[in-house]
Amino acid sequence: MMRFWEDSHQIRKYLNQQIITPERMRVIDANARVLGVSDLQLMESAGHALADVVRRYHPTSVLILCGSGNNGGDGMVAARLLTRETEVTILYYDSPKMSPACRTQLSVLQNCAVKLFPMRCKDDLLTREHLFSQSDLIVDALLGTGVAGDLKEPYKSCVYLANETKLPIISADMPTPGIIPTVICSFHRAKSEGSETVDIGIPVLAEICTGPGDLLLIPDRRSSAHKGIGGSLLVIGGGPYQGAPYLTGMAALRAGADIVRVASPSYLQFPDLIHVPTKREQISEDDIDSLAGLCERADVVVCGMGLGPDSHQVVSAIAPYCRKAVFDADALRLPLPVAKETIYTPHAGEFARITGKNPGTEIHTRADVVRNAATDGTVLLKGEVDVISDGEEIRFNRTGTPAMTVGGTGDILAGVCGALFAVIPAFDAACIGAYVTGSAGEIITEQMGYGLTAQDLLPVIPQILYRHTTLGHT
Image (tube, rainbow, N blue to C red; front, side):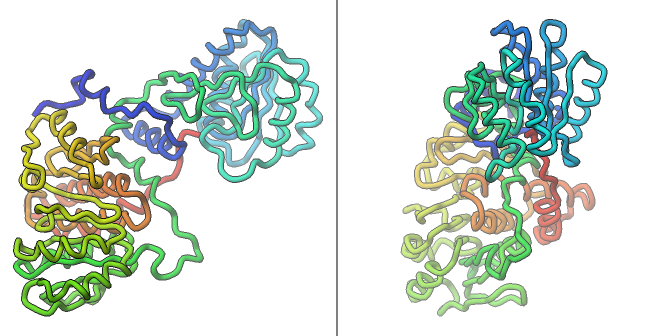
């Protein structure tokens, strides 16, 4: 199979050109760092672009307002680049929590012809109020994508004083809330309407492939969290293959679900899971009423593992009762079950069974086919490179090893996706589920070689999911 990242024409068409959210941009920044592009490299590129916009106005003096995050560092780079052609003054928020990259840039400026004025509170700013009226142009590098909650001092007063000048204002990446920019210089992708977008050298794969940065989308649990906050899941499966739904249930618990019920004809000794017995040795129409009630109460239903082909009428009947559902394995038959929100996790054979189309082996062909097929929900096509689409966006997952061809790893994936689906949107849950399950397989393969079992992945899943940093390029 062609390495799709070698074909620039094919790869570019999977980039989403719409306005991006700050949260998604932090994911891309973090993935770029893993691919070897440092914060300082991104900062240098952003600062160069910002300086170029300033030069259009030919100012004799520039005031640059810098926050303590990486957005402030972008402004500091621009300041350094502008010192040979104009007078540059910087007002910067002197916070003990200043990002390392921003502090590096501040240190460099100590050796440049720049007037540096720290501010920690509103009073510090007001003593320098005259700097606003003495400038020809203002650069807003206060917050960028790092804004959260209401604007606090001294940022609030910075915004007021900048707007009062009626001078041209250039915002770096995205405007600080309340400021009225003349130009918005957005880095990599637009984050607000009317932005000018500049390329700062982020690899394409940081955006179209899953990576550790995606984990930043998982919400943190507060100290006040209570039982059930991680979601209540119902797993429906088993009969012909008894262990499959229990692997799924344990994977869901390891991925953060709080309560997992397994509706299955077979009882296996897993004390962490709540067994819900069915009426016969195989799930049948006699179970529809009870399963429908359980589906209505569950945050997410994960269905199909080990079910066998003879129970599909039951799956079709209960699907409308599911608020959110992950359909896998034997649930992937026609008529295709559709919940209010749905994730489908087929391998190539199951995909052909539900769509009538062979996804092929070329990655761009698979991507196009999956996107076209994702009309009723998010599709996660498993393979050497997983393809995920919600009908609009497309992502690729490159984690995993050939050792994961062992039975049960797909059941693990379904459980991880189900647990994540309880707390984040379907597309993100599918992307992160694929990344985490494949990464767990890589870790176990490195330790054990080609002797892993699906159960071996379980203890590694929470280590990957919940031991991550939350620093982004802000």
